[in-house]
Length: 465
Ligand code: UD1
Ligand code: MG
Image 1 (cartoon, protein in one colour):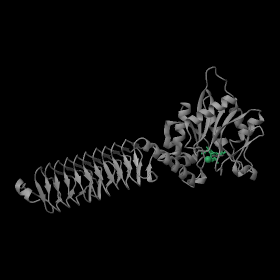
Image 2 (cartoon, rainbow, N blue to C red):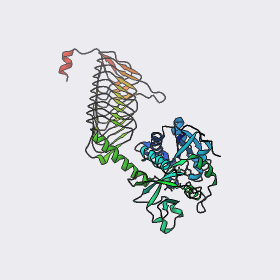
Image 3 (cartoon, helix red, strand yellow):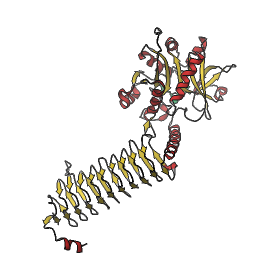
């Protein structure tokens, strides 16, 4: 049933096939949700689809790939393939819900993440130019293994696509592959999609059989012929996923270096595509930056650091440390071997050193926490010094409690802070103090459990250092 042609220009929508089982991945996770430089494969395909059409893509999923809907929500429109019986059946499911005012569709596989939007525009142009029933993308592949081969007639026209598993030995020798990216005339497609027959070899409905049908109808199948730059080879297994990751990472690192980022060994720098870096950032070997991480100008992330979803200020230095969901203001030093867990914020010029662990904690500007120490659910005012071994006992076995420490306080080595507890501005604790009650500003707490002493005169204080 063809919808009536409308007088105005008809819309172009991209249909993305993502209902397949992805059996070659051997995974519980649908193939198109596997990450590539930190984003699911499908996210890249959707970007290219939107760039080429300016419309919301229509994505086909099946019960087996329901997790995809949960991941992308109402960012796209959805079609449903009850059981994944092949790419032809997936396209049929999409056409069932495609609005009648759509005149052309791009059909894309969800597993070709490195394609570019401008290639899809060329594909649309090629079909229009040749007035073809549809246009496909043919790649002269260095390694055609596993992919459908393009069979041409003597005049060079596309005659058939043969899947590798159905191909004869001669056909397998053909080096030109079908990239699985198409532009269709929707009227022709709606007429023909219901006449697809299952493959005798696999029982699947192959979208690629539409080539044969168009030819039988006397219609042309156009081809956009492209050289193999590795971008259009679909990802079917984890070895291909690793290759795509390598290629994308190399490109991404190169592009950051051209924008002012120093990498001493880019082959060991792992950046998600979502990370943002300023000029004069230096990334030493074995650095991983993930998610929404942003790094400010002049900052060095030194060897062996992993930073996840965090904001790092300007002129900071982070060395061999792990930082998750945290924020560093400017000129902060972290590491080596510190762990900043979610909810940590470190004020300007503060220093967090060896074997320090922080969680849901705010360090004011200039705080020093140099040696093995745990601060959880705490707030520390400016310029407070945290002695080696200081620990907040923030958990009583049932509930987490907060610790509040004022400005310019001095926590002696091995101070235990039994939360909830407040230590006032300028207060001090003696070595090994177990602080069970609040310490008023300017006083000294010593012993187990800690008792409050009157402050010593300043002169004596100086000579005691
Ligand atoms: C397909 C092409 C092949 C081409 C290759 C390019 C067919 C028959 N073969 O093979 O010619 O060289 O892509 O990468 O089309 N899908 C569904 N429902 C299904 C089956 C698949 O939505 O029932 C989706 C998958 O999720 C995937 C896409 O269609 O995103 C392609 O499926 P896949 O199994 O990877 O096809 P290939 O064997 O790679
Ligand atoms: Mg594939």
